[in-house]
Image (cartoon, rainbow, N blue to C red):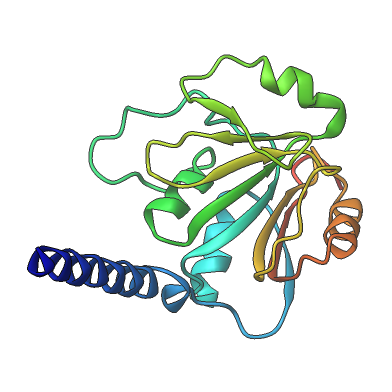
Length: 193
């Protein structure tokens, strides 16, 4: 009888050690941050990837101030995707630059956002007045939220701001108020000059 308890205790301990080892191997140990802080303005969305690639960042959380064109999901890849104007986020996920995503929706567009047709499962997030988890086929945690509901993020993040959707200064002020720091902020001005 005691032999079975010992075996189960050893199995549970081995499982705990394995979980800790995997978490350490795939967790913070594989995140690469850029030295210093930098704000870069780019002429097209895909140039953001080149900035991140040049700085060598990996395994990061992205705070995305933009429209999100991938709400319906993309299933038409044949082989690895190529970087294009419309797939910056997906491409960055495949290249292990992004491991978690906070998609910021303007407060005034929240209800409209929730009514968009999607192939993804949308689940409310406890503790966020306006926050939903968007299921992602790549296994990437995607959180949709508004500026008013954005929680504090304790790690240094990447930031991408589409100047056609959000005012860059207001987005940066929001991050400062929430105590969120970034090593690389990329601003795409689009049609704004």
